[in-house]
Length: 117
Image 1 (cartoon, helix red, strand yellow):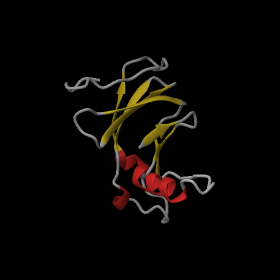
Image 2 (tube, one colour):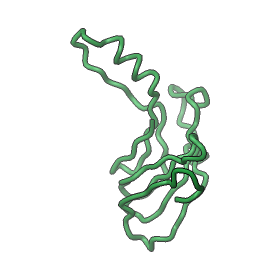
Image 3 (cartoon, one colour):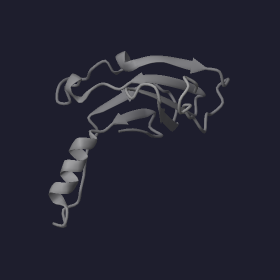
Image 4 (tube, one colour):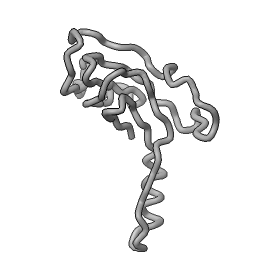
């Protein structure tokens, strides 16, 4: 799972681990908490929208206040050393789309069957 925030970052979450933690603590009064396994950086303004590709489930698009759409490859959990030194997060940015003249992008959707954003 991926989420965006006003802190200009894209956070990646391990859904399998989240489900395991929720089911392990279910009914025991344990509060569920999870941390992202990786943070993607590259935007310079708050982010408002994220959408996945309907063609490739390893690709997401993000947009926000700066008027730029960034295209990201989501790394597998196995490809990321969450306890090691910071990795080059920019290696996962596949490109950017600049067509909004620095105006905020409030919505973003990928066409369900065609390669259109």
